[in-house]
Image (cartoon, rainbow, N blue to C red; front, side, top):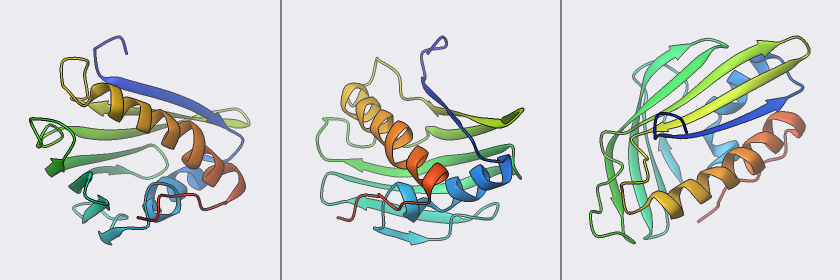
Length: 147
């Protein structure tokens, strides 16, 4: 977190193509409560976690097997005073080939310690990236939130 934004890295024994495909399959690792599309440039999608979190994302950067960036265009976080804290932030996945491994560098640009949801949101992202995303990439096991 050298620049103040949340950053999490994982290393998996899969190809950059397999990693790229898994990340773009958002219902496989983040939430099955998703509407919209998540695979092509300018696709828009919404995710909902009960009445706690709702956000809309637009896929603004897509470099096959290398990078995926979502812009959060709307957000409603019911557990903080400034419910739209995520609006205008960006969620980035950089995919780096390294011999027989692939590194995923996840960054949530704008999710900094200065905003109220930082602790809860950063803890959730750690669980998603280190847990369900890594498992989905490596083993193909679907583990997203279902509510």
